[in-house]
Image (cartoon, rainbow over all chains, first blue to last red; front, side, top):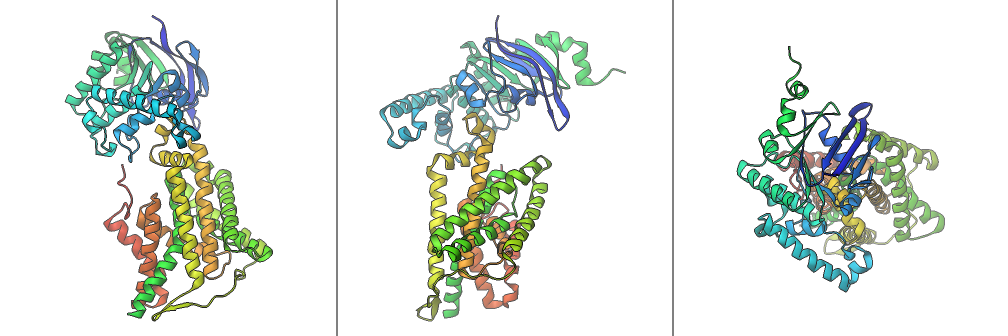
Length: 254
Length: 287
């Protein structure tokens, strides 16, 4: 199986403190890969580097074979690599539908002239995107909430909006930052089912998550990070049995 | 009755003067997420820039406002990029304290160049209009009109232009905005020019109302801050409403207490609003 994402020797420090010290791993194409590790392992920093929000000090990121290190987030999105945020705040003044429309790609109406005069191409694309937004909302069972402002949604619904937003960008791969954090269990199960069905359609997923039963249920491939490095990679059962992983989570054995 | 009406008119007129720098202050806060007390300096820089084109070239109020906007905006950009931004990693409080220092620096540069004297704009003195027992200064009416025009222009900019939308997106959620290809650093630079420029334009309006000196901005700083807090920090309509409410409150208070207590109204307004409605009159709930 070829790799959708390859991270090689990524380093990044903040004011002299190293958060990432040469992380390397690969996310197999078509997999659901779990990225786990104790707090402070550098998972969020890594996600920010891969999604283009942070520039690494060193190392390379390759997506579907092409080097994309340090690409701006919107360029990565255009290539099919998008992300969700742990704190799914969205734009407070906008509705669910507007969020979806905003992240629809290739909208000529975003140009000044097309936007002002609403040219035929912009209108056509807008109809396509609206259709697509409606489809995604139905699929994620958000259709009744399409016109609601995101501030009116529950935490779990906001996470669904995040996922829907990434789907608008026609992704090949989605990075998910704690998609279940702060979500009630029944909606959590629903989100898990959505993730599985997206993966079944060929979208590669990589999620940072603390919920171990969920990782075991969803992820065929698990990467464990600790202290800014990759510790172990493998299946869930392999990595949890690994002594180094137990040590990282539970501390040194006496 | 006339005294009350006169107080209402005066309050509205003086509130409209505060509204312009208050919108600048709140716009800076919305993007940079720290209260920049350097606006006092930008107000004074703008006031002197406007005064300079007015007295040196004999230009009217509108060109003076444009010049003040440019001078205020550029001084803001220089201070923000040259000094304040570098302190960002140390937290909002540090930058905010540094902005007080920036204000002192700007104030003293002005003092060094122009001296400490009071200076007035060179405009014809117009007789007050009288309406019943209420007096309204013609210049004050012009100031009101100019303030309304400036605030309307800012609204238009924020609501309808690409930069305005991008600015609101960054204020709401900088990371999400980046996914859409908006560069928050560029937007921050534009916001600084806009916010500091408005402060500068406000300086000219204040100068047209009375006179200017290097402390012009510092003297209104509390009112500007109170207006922005009153309306909800980061909310542009809030800053306008806050300024008008504050102007009215100050003038109405004068009916009951001696003029020396005028400044206390600003403090009282901040205390009251923080006690009973911490997000301000039009502010949004903190997430």
